[in-house]
Amino acid sequence: MPHSRRYPVAAAILALFAQFPAVSMAAQAAQAAATAPAAAASQPAVAAQARSGPGAGPTDWIQSDDLTLSPVADDVSRALATARAALAAKDNAKAAESLQAAARALQAQADKAAKTDKAQAAADAKDARDVQVRMAALVRQIDHTAEQVRAGKLNSTAELDRTLTRAQRADLDRRWVLMDVESWYPLTQQPQKNFADALIQFAHKDYQAAAKDVRQASAFFRLEATRAHGDARKSLQGAEAQLDKTAAALSRGDIKAERDLTRSFAQADHDLALAYHARAKESLARKAYGEAGYELKAAAQGLENAATWSGDEARGAAGAAARDARAVGDKLVSGARWTEKELAQGFDAVRNGLARLDHSGTGTALAAPAASAASDRGKG
Image (cartoon, rainbow, N blue to C red; front, side, top):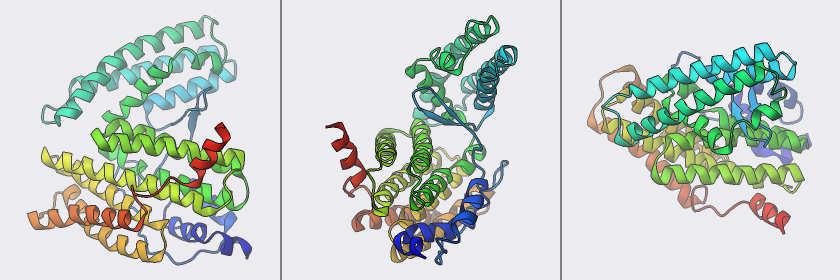
């Protein structure tokens, strides 16, 4: 069983993700089982208490002409995806109708931004007001585009993509800050599933498929950066850039060792966990206890994810810390009684766990992986 010996982390990840009801991973794991039998893994499954179900992630993606990926995860993106499919099928009437539906969904989100809770953190309220203004402009742009499609002046997805500038696409991403936490939380495990899929594809030497999985993960970091503030936002933007470099190196066949991938994944997961931890503290400060609970649970999962790439010892230590944090998060989400001591222990568990990974070389002190060096050589 050569794949098991050459790709030990991939084997462990397969066992880990067998616990998640993810549609994409189920087929992948079944396919890879013969060549990468699973090692025991202690990481528990995320029990997402949300309307869309545990571990639910996007089943489709929008890829723009510049290769930018966006998940189909809300009413706006679903309508845009339908419009693109209709345009590709030369059904301009349906494409125009779907674009108008996207504009109406976007307007509804802009209206939501206008009604932002006054108890919201100052930074969040400012973001929401900014998003409202930008969305209003986008609504007008999309309505105008719908009329052009209906009139037959736009007849391809490439032409459709050119109606939005890069800055306007970034504005479209900013609606992520308005997503309610119960809709957002089930998506938080998606990057780790993409990383696991990428390792499976890498083990099978399908480097283009592996690169696509990494780009999908990078798309989530781009979106999560819109929700973050200060240093956390910079870290997520840096992680996105590093993942894009890793994907490019995979596409060129420049990555030869599993470790070059797992180092990049560990750093990204670490940065994401830190961002979730920071968000949890912000929510707690404004007494949004339910949101703080979900965000703390996401931070705990991120800690475990980061440790997953570092071996059994790191995974075991992180698992204990994550369980403590998750227990507190569950209480915050459910409205159960909690003590200040429990709260401090839960938040400290994640912070200290991430600090231990830093000390071991998994976190922010980690040197850039070989994928970056390979990418830089490719520019020369």
